[in-house]
Picture 1: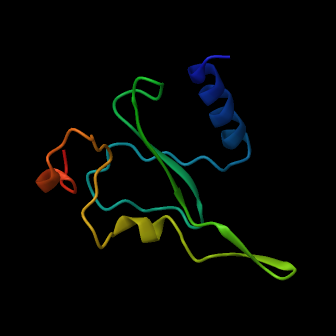
Picture 2: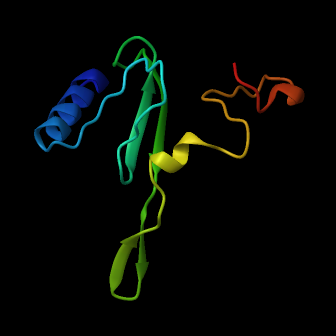
Length: 101
């Protein structure tokens, strides 16, 4: 199975479960969904050629016999205390390490 076929199957499964949210080219503040999960950033097309970044927000932690979310959420990913970039090349000069490209 190709990456694109696998991705379509995965997105279809999440769509059927009501667990797929898509935000496209927002021109205002993004209303992030509650909770934790995986997010992707695409450039123009949702296929292997357009994939820029895959990230994860929040996770479950175990304490004895209980499992609870750690408090991370999509909303917490909207602000960072360090500059951030989606792609970073080892060829970048050191002074550009944390700049937007």
